[in-house]
Amino acid sequence: MPISDQGVHGHPATSVLTVDLDAIATNYRTLSARAAPAVCAGVLKADAYGLGLVPVARRLWAEGCRIYFVASLDEAITLRAILPEAEIVPLNGLLPGDQGYYREYGLLPMLNDLCQLEMWLAYCRVIGSLPAALHVDTGMSRLGLSAVEQERLLSEPGLVEGLQCRYLISHLACADTPDHLLNRRQQADFAALVELVPHGRASLAASSGIFLGMAWHFDMVRPGVALYGGAPVDGAANPMQSVVCLEGLVLQLRDVDSPETVGYGATYEFAGKTRVATIAAGYADGYLRSAGGHSAARWRNITLPLVGRVSMDLITLDATAA
Image 1: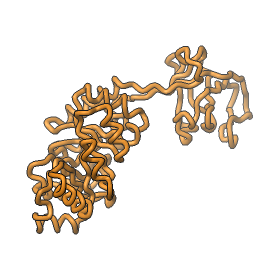
Image 2: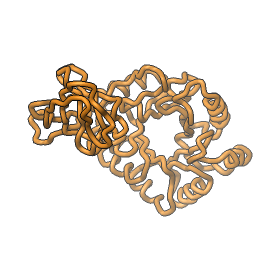
Image 3: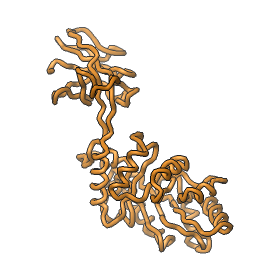
Image 4: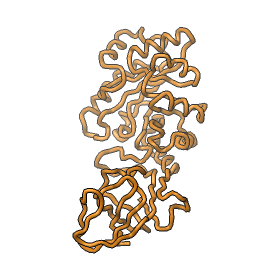
């Protein structure tokens, strides 16, 4: 986190969060290259992980991304307004009464159980065939067709007769831990289900799954957090670029000495003479409240450690080196 003693880019705000769309684009290219020849989609849930659905989607489109996954139907409708030609899939599933929205906005419902599958097929029998995506659970125990439902589909192929299934997806539970045994089990279980969708794309890997290897890539990958700079593999160097920068104004400098303390709870006691800088940024601005005592900021390329707790709109730094 850079700090400033002369305002933040001439802006009246005392803290500014900058989203680097170029870095997001670079991360998309990195992930696409890693997954090739599999297609690389983009996951834009929760307002593109809080960074702005509209600008992020437009930039990814410019980079060649044509398939987008969001969480909810309302996110999908917002996205459709700016990307009329994109393929958009809300992950949370088809709810009763929502079929018409999918038709009106040209969206693909994610069918997460047999009830949703039957509901969509019944709708399509009335208005004509429309595409959908099918989600099978292979180890997360959240959304997706259960093992019992999967066995029923395999033994009764007539249940999917007439389904225009464009994507078959599942989700890895432990992909950020490459040696976890569940990764291979989920890959094998998913591979056995690909026959359910002979004419659609199969997709198992999200961000971390891309780094497990080609056996997990299938036809399409769906990175989310890695697009936004999140480390895809626990304990390994992060190959993704950071995409956000929080800058804050120096509000006050104060000289202190032992045994004075700083911040709530008096959790940090100064060992000697120290210059403390109070910065206009805190957990209300996205600075992790849990980061107190083990994070830092930068001023003119000098690293200044954070001392004391993170407050709502203030942090305190050891600015002695500045």
